Amino acid sequence: MEILSLLILLAVSIWVYKDAIAHGYSSGSALLWSLGVFFMLIVFLPIYLITRNSKRRTTNHYYDYQQEGPIKVGESSTSSEQIYCFHCGSEVSSKFVHCPYCGSKLKDADRKCQNCGEKLEAGWKVCPKCGAEQI
Image (tube, rainbow, N blue to C red; front, side):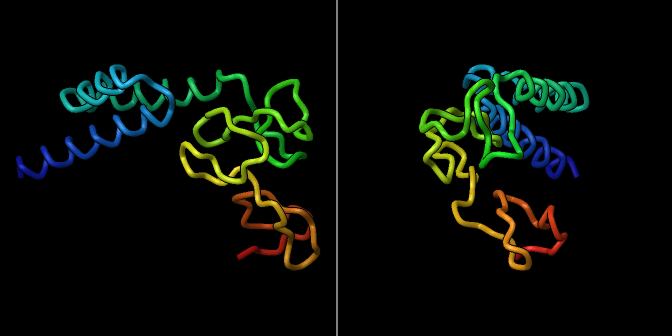
C-alpha cells in the first residue's frame, strides 16, 4: 500500500512539473512546485492549481469568439501579426492553425457546420446557430 501511495505522489509531482512548464513557469519554479506537491500534496496541489489558473488569466490576451481564435488585446485578427494560444498562452503567428508549443488547434481554417454551414471554431462540438452536433 505504501508503494502505491508513493507511485501516486510521484505521478502527480511529474504532472505538476510538466503542467507548470506548459504554463510558462521556469524549470526552477516548476521543480519547486513538484517537490512541494510530492512532500505536502494536500497543501501544495490546491495552491498550485489556483495560482496556475490566475497566472493564465492575468496574461495580456483573451479569446475573441467573434473572430477566428485568440487575439491580442487591442489588435484585430485580420493582421498577420502575433496572437496568443488560448491553451498555453504562447505568442504565435496568426497564420498558424496549430500552436507549435503545445500542439492545440488555434483555428480550423475551413470548418463549417454540417447542417447550416455556419463557420465553426476549433473545439466546438455543437453549432451555436442551429445546435447541430459536430463530428
